[in-house]
Length: 558
Image 1 (cartoon, one colour):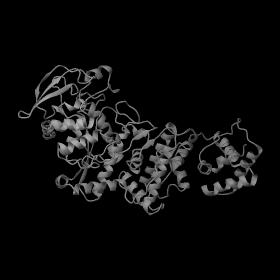
Image 2 (cartoon, one colour):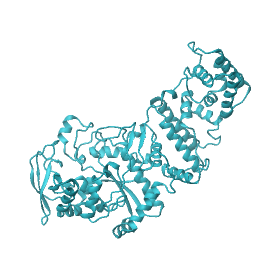
Image 3 (cartoon, helix red, strand yellow):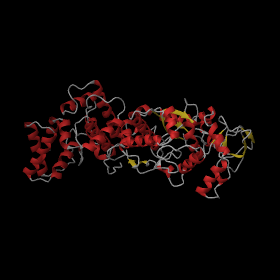
Image 4 (cartoon, helix red, strand yellow):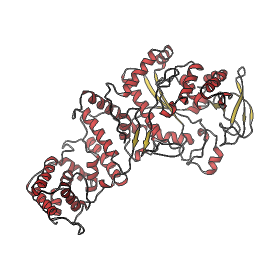
C-alpha cells in the first residue's frame, strides 16, 4: 500500500480545495452570479461501459469530501454524479454475448438491454450497481443520466452554440493536433441514427442554422468497429437526437449544468488531452470559466491513479477491482478512509491478497480515531490532520466516546481460536479491549470487525497469519534440551504468576537471559508446540488469548 511522505500542511486537502474554489468564484462575475442563484455544483461523470472500477470511486469520494468541506464553510453545495449513458459501445463487452456485441456495437449504453434483471438498460445496470453502494461509502450525491439531459433539452442551447461556432472548435483541434486531424473538418455533433439507433456510425455533414437541423449519413467507414445502416437525411440535433463528441461534451456540460468544481484522473489532464480541449472550448466557444481545478486555458492537476496489486484498472477490459465488488475485499468505510487520508496527487497501490496492507490500513484508521478522541498525541499539526481525516472518513454520526478498538491482527487471531463470538467478546473483556459497560452498538462495532477478520483470514491473509491451535504436541517436532527447558520454565512461571501482555513479554526475555538461549530458538520452540509452525501471532498476546491452562498443558508435554 502506498505510504507517501506526509507533508504536514496546516489545512487538509479537501478544505484547501474548498477555499480555492470559493476564491475562484469570488474573482469571477460569471461564477459569482451562478453561485448566488444555484450554489456550488460539484460534478463528476462516468461512462457505464461495464463493471466500474474502484479508481472511479476515488473521484467520487474526492468530490464528496470537497462538497462536505464547502458546506462546512457555510456555502450551499451539492455533488451530482452523471451517467454518460449516451456514449456508445465501442469494443466487445465481457458482459454481453458475441451476438449481442455484434448487434449493439455503436449503440449508446442507455439503449442496450441490461445483462442483469431489474435494470432499465446496460448503462443503468452498471451505474446503479455502484450508486446503490454510496450510502455504505458515506457518499452523498444526486444522480443524473446524460442521455436524459439530452432528451429533456438541457443541452439544446449549447448544441446550437457549438454548431454555430463549429469553425472555432475545428480551429482549436487544429491548433492542438495539427491540420491532419480528422476533427478539423467534422461538425461537433454525433447524430443518433433514427433507423438503427447507432451513434458511432453517423457523420454530421451540414448545419442549417436557420432551420436548426443537421444533415447526416449513417454509413460504413466512420469507425472500424461498427457498421452503418445507410440511413441519411436532415434532423433536429435537439432533445436526444444525438450527442456531442466527448471532449466537446465535457466543455458543454459546464455551462449547461453550471459546474463549479470537477476534477478527474490525471490521464485526462495530460498535455493537449481531453481537459485541455474542454478548457479551450469552454473559454473560446461557450464563454464559461472552466471549473476548479482549471483556470482558463490552464487545466490544473488531476488526481493520481488507484491501482490494485500494481495493476492500473480498466472498466471495459475488466482489470482490477470493481467498485461494486470492492466491499468483498474490504469494508466500505476502510476504503473511504484510505481514499480520504491519501492526498489526491499521491498514487495508491492497494494489495488485499497475501500482504499486510489491510492490517496497516486498520492500524491507521484506529490511530486517527485515537487522536480524534484525545487518546493519542501526534503533535499539534498532525493531530489536526488526523482529526480531519477521521471526520471526513467516518460514515454516520460520530459517537460520544471512542469505540472499542481491536486491531485486525488480534481479531484475526481470536476468530481462529474461538468459534463463538460471545467467547471472543469475553476474551476481549478480560484483556481490556472491550469495556465492561460496552453498549450494544459498541459490541456490534466489534462484531463487525470480527466478521471481516474471519473473511480476511480465510481469503486474503498472508500464510504466517493463519494457524491451527494444536491439542497435542506433534511427534514430528524436534526440540533441543535448551528449548525444552525454556518452555518448561515458562509453564512454571505461568502457573505461579499473573501477566498482562507487557509483563509476559518481559518474562520471555527473563527466561532467555537465565538460560542463555537465543531469542529466535525460544520463540520458534513455542510456536512449534502451540501451532506446529515456526512463526505465529505475537506470543504474549496469543498465550493470554488461548488461556494459561491450555498453554501450560502443551508445554508440559515436551
